[in-house]
Image (tube, rainbow, N blue to C red; front, side, top):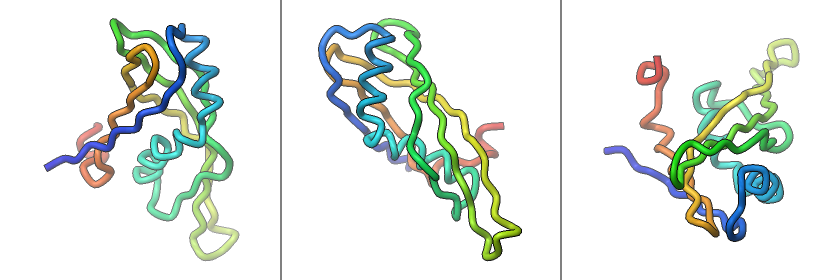
Length: 117
């Protein structure tokens, strides 16, 4: 059975996409679990090098929005010559109820590239 983690972030009332983008930039520490789920698909040894960068928020329909984000990651494989890294670009849909955004994150164990191809 798939579990879903809910992340709720209070951002303020009546915000448009540009204001939501700025509010989420201010709360980017709270977005760490969003990026963590992407690391699972890269490698279990991968870590986020800096912070999650909020690129933009786009309105989809009604109360549904999409967050576009990026982060730099690295994975150490026991030797500096084998260290790998890169920049991951991602997006995640969320709902905005007028004062709070709510992300529903699927359980990382429930995700695999088999399901995404």
